[in-house]
Image (tube, rainbow, N blue to C red; front, side):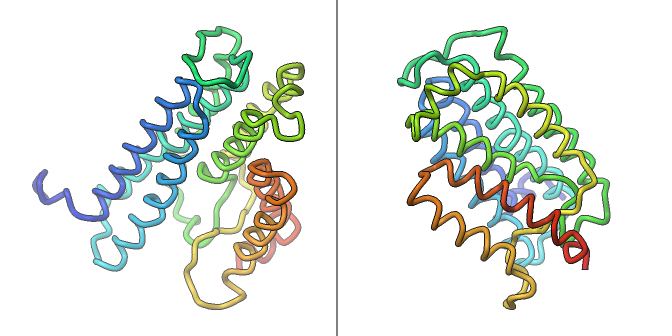
Length: 240
């Protein structure tokens, strides 16, 4: 395969995912998580679309698989790490350059474990219809919901986190260990047009839509917790 022939539609979508991840990180370090969230959502769409395009066009390849993981390390590894850094380093959630804070550097433990998870995922042949451990996109959704809720000071969360940063410190090892755990978790991509294959996705989406009215962006984090609980309670169904 020549270098130019590798620039097919699925790979271009993957590279666009990487581009959006870089933009999200830029806005995070400018203290603007709302714009960062927009680029992160674009990364989700592109990450979903590259696989669909590869299957539809029969262009699945080892290069595409590796590119996907490399893009995900940035969009769903470094970006949520930067979100955690923002929660730990920022003394106010107003736009502006985020200060350098050595005490906030543990936030980047999460990207390190995200990279480890993605490397293990590429070598693991079991994870075709389900995941072992929490996926990097799900981890990003959780952290993004927490960050946006703090930025908007929804339910006073921003003020509360400024006084209770140990919660953020505690989340870092919890999320990192979930990433590389062997806990079976539902895959949330549409694969078949039936209830049995898609009920976890439908339940999580309906829960998000309902809880958003009450909790705003924090509903993202709450929905990920629900997803983890569903996977644990129905773990036998996960691997069917």
